Image 1 (cartoon, rainbow, N blue to C red):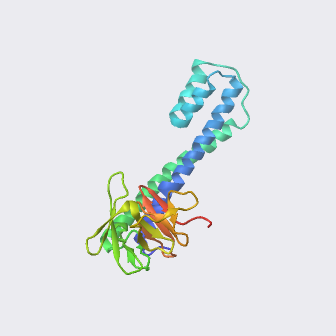
Image 2: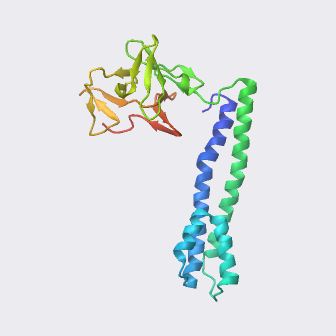
Image 3: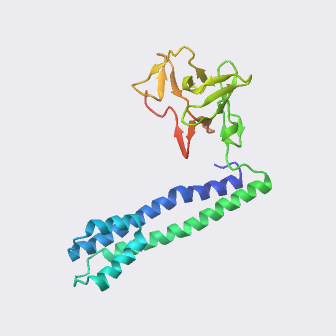
Length: 239
C-alpha cells in the first residue's frame, strides 16, 4: 500500500489529522448540540437558536457558559431530560479522542518527515501516463501521442501554460487531456462542450478534460488533478 515506512507514517498521520479528526469533532459538536437542545426544550427557553448557534461555533466554551447560565443566572426547576447527559458524555469522549488523535497524527507526520529526510525516502509517489515514478508532483510531465513532453507553468487566476521540451509555450485555455491520458492542444478551437459541461469537451469521438492545474496518475492508472488542497479525480463519470 505504501512504498516505504516514511510514506506510511506521514500518510497515516495526515489521514488522521485531515479526515478522522474533523469527523470526530463534527460528531462531538452534533452530540453537544443535541444535549444542549434537550435541556433548552425542557426549560422552555426563549433563546434556543442563539445557544445552538453558539454551541456550533464554540462548542466547549458555549456549553460551559450555558451551564453557568442555567445553574446560577436563570435557574429553572426541570426534570432531568432523558438522554441529555448521555449525549453530553458521548460528545466529551469524541472531543477527547479528537485531541488525542491530533497529537498522535502530528507525531506520526513528524516522524515520517524526519525519517524521509534521514533515509532519503519519498513521502509520496506520483506517476505519469507511462507509469514512471516521481517523488514530487511538480516533476510529473504530460505526454502527447507523438512523444513530446510538457510541463505546467502556473499563473494567477488563469489556466497557466504548458511548456514543451523545446521551450515552446502553449496557452492553458486551449490545453486538454484526453481520456487516454495524452496532452492535446486545440489550436483551431474545434472541441465542443461534452454534455453541456465546461470541464469536459469532445471532438465527437474522444472526450477531453480542460486542463487547469497539475495532473498526476496513481499506480492503478487513475488520473487526478491537484487544485489547491483538493485532488480531483478526472473522467469519473458515466459516458
